[in-house]
Amino acid sequence: MRILVIHGPNLNLLGCREPAIYGRETLEDIDTSLQALAEELGVQLRTVQLSSEGAIIDYLIENAQWADGLLINPAAYTHTSVAIADTIKGLELPTIEVHLSNVHAREEFRRHSYIAPVSIGQICGMGSNSYLLGLRGLAAWLTKTKLI
Ligand code: DQA
Figure 1 (cartoon, rainbow, N blue to C red):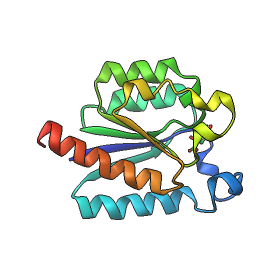
Figure 2: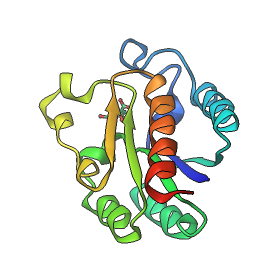
Figure 3: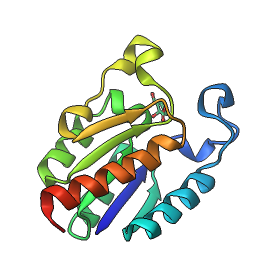
């Protein structure tokens, strides 16, 4: 089973970015935990952090053939990007959307996601555990639904 992991803009600042909201873990810490879980689950990961909308779209199109599923934290593009949602829908890539913070308990504009309607589900508010739960959920969904 092969899963793409995409971290959107500003997630490379984790560790020093608004720690009261996002915690002290760095993106490298999160990727290390994801890799350990992937090995336990027998999943191969391709992980990348991309800061622009176009780069995320190009990466998705270039890597979709390789992947069985997508774990994505689209960061601010969650709330703005029809284009990324169209790409995920067009590629028919089973997707789980994750957020470190509880986007529903913050500013009003963060409650809306363009990505949620083209995803299997959304996990938020659990800090880095959102990613780990997302990976477990996606692997279980793929096993059950796609019989990989
Ligand atoms: C975020 C939530 C988004 O609203 C925000 O723009 C981010 C991070 C999260 O992981 O909590 O950059 O996706």
